[in-house]
Image (cartoon, rainbow, N blue to C red; front, side, top):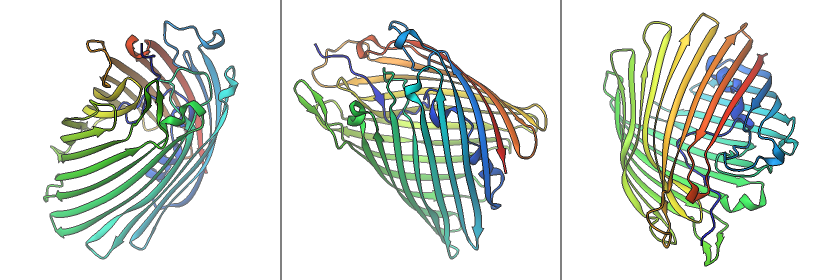
Length: 410
């Protein structure tokens, strides 16, 4: 009988990483970059405290590591933001360093890094684009990985994008992105991969400000290390072709809709049944009335590759809704909830009829207080749940996280 795998999603659309690493805190550098654009160099520092009652996402039917599920941690942050326009060019840089210390699971203590840089370039009146890179070092999610070992993951991303204005209302755009993921833990290194994406788009933008475009995209995933099984090794390499319609519709002034949907064909190497096709897409809606409340919602249906000896890919279908309340000039409250179903496609030779699906739920509430122009204090609660799939070795769990932060912008 084939052993249960330890699954690790590599392209899930539902961002449910546990409250570890950079996912714990507000990223003040990004917020500062948005609010202090073209203001040169800014420095910031932060301190955080967190508690999670199921830190390692231990399933309900399994014993906890060393008899303990919960833990507390402390985090220190320091970073810099540089955002400056030089003539027609603009440069945006973010550098962040963090240190996390846990009370009980001290083997998870680590230093995190997040470095980002983007050059927004323009040549003449018709040619513009972006050139950028990012490096991130953080703990990988434990949502689908049962272990109490430290599993650091490094992400290296490079991208280039160029657009040519064919006509006041028509634009031709092309882009290339390369992402590389590397895991520190030896038994997770079979999940190391490189993804390369090439896309082209013809975009139409009328005077109303809305836009519609046709996007053609090719995505290739390559795994340098093969996954061992009893019959030999598995080849997780995949290729995906997409032809989608991108729509940005500006409604009555308070409503916006963004959609990217169309036909996707995906192929994966041995063993069989890794080939699939169908409609994939995502719809986002934003409502910003002229008051203190604003709303947003999303729907999606997308294929995603996974790393497993049983399943070759998953179809993720989900929905989310959120609201923001500007209670006062200094206090803002955000609430959101999301639900996603994951249907796994079995590899050749696996017994048919088994329930290869599970679901993820997330609910969060966050309050942010702008104590002064330079000081921000925030508190956040999040609950994460997984229904589980016994066939896949995924048990159900429930986890609650509370995080407090204070950030100072110099």
